[in-house]
Image (cartoon, rainbow, N blue to C red):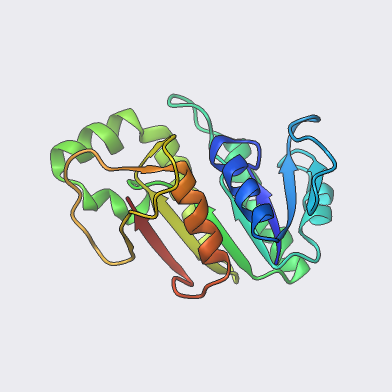
Length: 209
């Protein structure tokens, strides 16, 4: 498959790029700064551009089979109009280019998954500590779900830097969350790559931890 990865230079994005190339996919890594990736890797195309540049987004997206976002806002205190505006432009560019499949990495706590948590945890995690990034993810989820794309929203628990294990749960039905839920970035990357070739969770939001 031809994959376009936004957020490719982030911690999860880099793992996803590596796994995709190792699996024989063609990867376009969309990055915001020169030198984020070493050029010359077989199967890897690098496009450098900002998220508010429709021409660069179009350049990256045309001809793709699947677009994937592992983008994050990077702040616990400030909303990220670059992220929310960028996702909206990516969705529009995909619709114009006729690229239908979009996978978006969100987070447990975004959208209706806030109600997976008990009231006390929900108050402190969703209402206070992660209020800003979860608000951005929720806004992006709504934009994606209202599009004409075939989308899958993946909501992992707390991200760790552990190895790929394959030992995690996932689903789209309501679930109760108790305790500290974590999943490795390597497992998230592998799950995203699996969903890129699957319609199992088409037009659904999926939790994993």
